[in-house]
Length: 255
Image 1 (cartoon, helix red, strand yellow):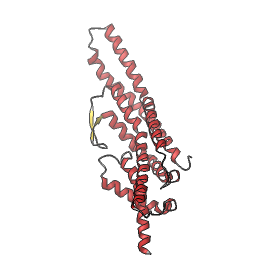
Image 2 (spheres, one colour; image 1 turned 90 degrees about the horizontal axis):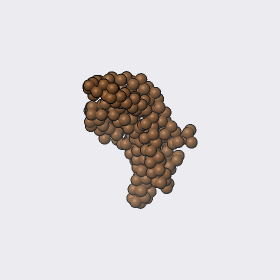
Image 3 (tube, one colour; image 1 turned 120 degrees about the vertical axis):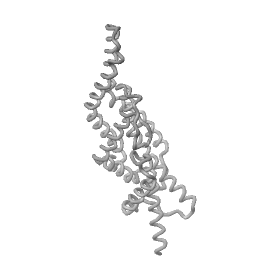
Image 4 (cartoon, helix red, strand yellow; image 1 turned 180 degrees about the vertical axis):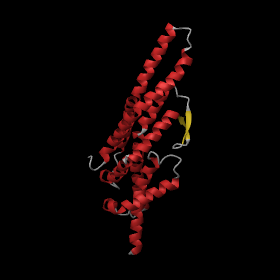
């Protein structure tokens, strides 16, 4: 009796880990190379252990055949993959906005080592990504991510049919929206770049003897950085609201 009880508990624990662990593997911040695989796996097991009493009534009984168990685990991993990719798409606008801002401020070729992705990235993009992830943790927005994964058991029950079409459509729609949000975030810098470059063009026509490139580059860096610092706070507020609104449909209180 005790052996069967332990087997069922281990099965349910691994079933929860299959969904939560896959989501954590692709979640922003945790998916970076700076976080080791052992750390992500340990976090997934700790969360699964804490949530098992709550999720226990929603979990199906252990299948008797290996094929059924394999399909059940693959289904849970697919749901976790969807939420991990969804959270990646939700912070994609800041990465795109960083590229737009880099072009606007003349920092396109200024690269820095990004500790999150452990690769070279544009300095503005690395700054915005770091600030975004820091604010997500400070404002407890990451709790919404955890709640969405837990409440997903009410939407996508283990062992049930998965809406793969809805998954793909949601990711494509959110990806398309990310470009619109990125343009909104980078709009102040895009307008600045347009006005500044037009002004340099007029100056070049009015004073051909002036080397506008040598005069304009320092001014572009100085004024562009100033505009970025002024617009940074509203950008972060828009970004945090966008992330929260993207996760709201998957919360039990939001649906």
